[in-house]
Length: 217
Ligand code: TMP
Image 1 (tube, rainbow, N blue to C red):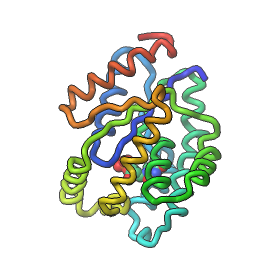
Image 2 (cartoon, rainbow, N blue to C red; image 1 turned 90 degrees about the vertical axis):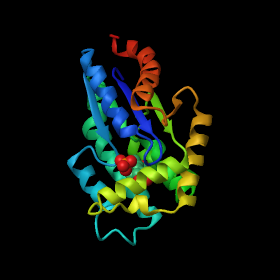
Image 3 (tube, rainbow, N blue to C red; image 1 turned 135 degrees about the vertical axis):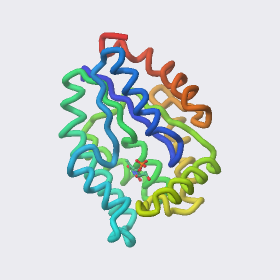
Image 4 (cartoon, helix red, strand yellow; image 1 turned 90 degrees about the horizontal axis):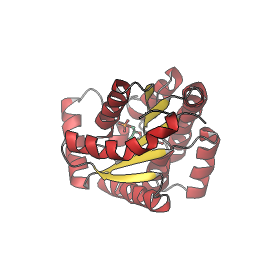
């Protein structure tokens, strides 16, 4: 495909949403057509699924399998409605989370069978793979602290995913390390605990060499 597909990954509070936004801004300043997206979400259907997964008052009894199918229903829609057409049109798609989140959260975190998780992901992603994945790491302590701050400043935005216990997030982190070790070319690990500016610069140093694919840098 002609465009460039960049994804951001990491646990809660790693700063990826801020960095994804900054990257899109920088690419646009340079004249690129850059499209910010997020998962779950990014389409009207996906945003409804996101609400169900995270904030709905009816989501308390959600099982791991339901969670797996919902994140992938959102993905199936996003890939076909937005990502694939954008890449075919030569755009740079910057997505806050993609299929590595499912392996890390539902595979490692919820401990669902990895083979089943990957099979469901394959249906949803329909052959679309990121060209480059930026995995931002922070310690579990920083992640926990940032989660606690978010929950105390937004008490009306209860988030079911953030209610999981420490062991869950430790397993998610382990999952991300396994993903990065298996695909070091695609998945670049960056320390997310520096200043916003430092992390932004480190990201740029990884992204910049990939830009010739979209014909301009
Ligand atoms: P975030 O956009 O604030 O990171 O919230 C998304 C939440 O959804 C986060 O807790 C991770 C979770 N998630 C999964 O569990 N599996 C997935 O495949 C995706 C994309 C997200």
